[in-house]
Image (spheres, rainbow, N blue to C red):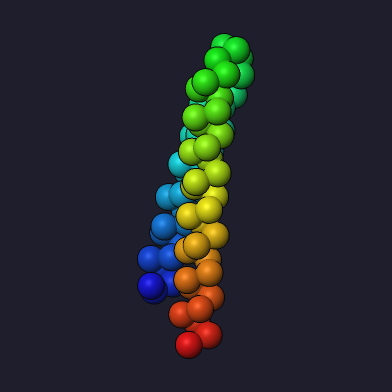
Length: 63
C-alpha cells in the first residue's frame, strides 16, 4: 500500500472514529446502554483497523 493510500485510509478512519465518539456521547446522554455498547464495539473495530493499516505500512517499508 502506498504512503498516500495509507494516509488517506487513516484519515478516513479518524473521521469515522470522531463520528463514532459523537454517537457514543449521544447514547450516554440518552441513557441507551444498547446503543452505547454497539458504538463502543464499532469504535474498537475502527481502532483495530487503524492498527492493521499501520502494521501493513511498516512491514511494506521494511521489505
